Image (cartoon, rainbow, N blue to C red; front, side, top):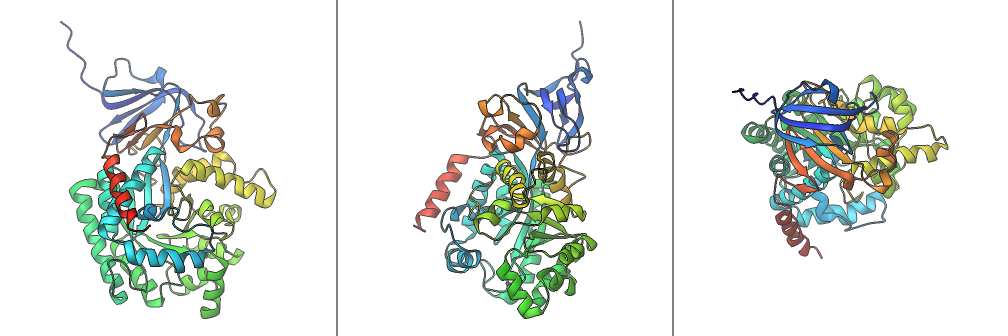
Length: 446
């Protein structure tokens, strides 16, 4: 009697078009991804799959693209509650007359938990497996991402005004320190290395010298990243230059804030000198083209930043200023926007957009040794895009993922070796319950 062969893998994806390193490597026409626990064990052609290999679960990816999970480099997940609340307004009017007042009235731990969970569902359903999130009561966002099974860099908001959870601005750094400790306890208890704490200074015009330097000092002590909205609008640059005599980038340099663990978000209004300074300090940038377009903030000088060698990632921003969290749509906007702005169809090719949203985003978040590619030893964060749709037929090459695919084409999402969504159904938590809770919160606004 033959002895049954022992299980080789926990999860095996077979027969798919494997895009192991988008923008960097050619696809494998018919391949597999083998996963044990939370880690990829092997990636290759089906002909290279060991004979007799078995798995606890096998997913046939035939007719689909298997690729790394997408990395959302900047989001305010809880702002799903404010989606569509205030549209078609300039940035400062949108913030000061609508968003800041709404946050003062409606942001609570309950709101952040449920609305971040709703954002997690939207991202998982559209192929995002890692998010860098920034908001208030951020420990509740961390709890929501943990329960949803997402990988997240969660950053507690710091601002020099009374804020949700921190009514006394003088306590903002102390509150951020407590968050870092709490997030690490949560991570150890459940999320493991899926959760990483960080800090988020809203901007140079809402945080003074002491706060910016204090937050950066705390980030350095704790070994975590500092995110900041930087040079987002012309109004911001004019205000900082009038007050400080230098650009927002030069202002942060003067304060000693810029380094490899600082992430500048938006970076729209940059001079060549600003770009050179960011490159010299190895400061990363996350661009959010759809938010910048909607708020008419401008077009980030991405080609110049790429030429300078900056680490670049792509983010959606919050869906109050986007209004969705679909990175496939964001990639399409990124590629097209820079072409029309410079009247040059060769700028930001589709392959580059794919790279920025996978391995590029992972590099920005300090996660390049974990995610962003499909390779043995990396964490098993991947997705299957269903090509059996008219708008994806025929499929000549991966460029079509940028110019025609949508988040709704994602068939399966896997994070840390766990199938969290399959056949368009969230498996990691109760989505109807989450949507019901958010609708109850929204009823108090309208």
